[in-house]
Image (cartoon, rainbow, N blue to C red; front, side):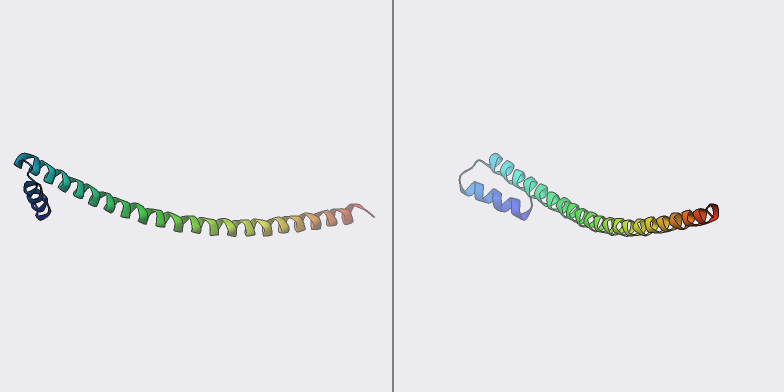
Length: 95
């Protein structure tokens, strides 16, 4: 038994619990403690993953903003090109 288990065991024995029940209770608490520790480690990993995802989302949002600005410029360029082409064609075919 670990230190914590022996302390729990001794406390149950001092309260008058039978030895078998005190041992089972101490082991159950030790398992619970190890489960809680494992969950805390997993939660820490999940928190790091969420933080990484937040950074990734921020990067994607910045990239989408850049693409929107670039597409706006491209639309203006295409519009100017069409206007110049129409002006040339009008000049070419009208007297």
